[in-house]
Image (cartoon, rainbow, N blue to C red; front, side, top):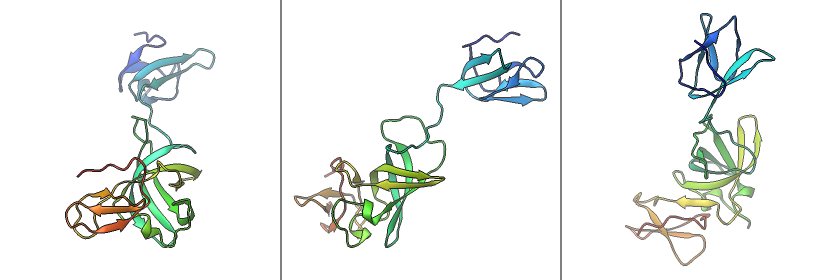
Length: 190
């Protein structure tokens, strides 16, 4: 059996033996046999005698400047925690489950007295990654397109829609009005 460079292989497919190559990225040693751990194309480094498989669907990693979608999971006086779901305009899944946070100074351009005036637990938001330190991800919603994309009423849990006022949402069912830092991309469902 001879695997060729650029050949497409499936996970578990035998690529060679340990006497021929060293296992590289996307491969593993299975009792002396080198096998693919991902769907992708074979790469062979003849100089170093390393065989690897480059997957076509590598998981996405966050970087500074990315715009992400997430859900508010907790609100403290100075920080709102966000479960980051995905990167905007990127169909690849995230490599790790990221949790970001929005500091009160990064919620909106103007002064904000309370973070709960900008977000509520369960809000779906769009935010920009401003800093990554280890597994800490700092987010910002100061841009016009960033902020709450979809919100539910804190009284009856129905979806809310935008009003004529900049930072106000109104419930579709009970008509309660609430403040949020609303994205220009807010999704209205009447």
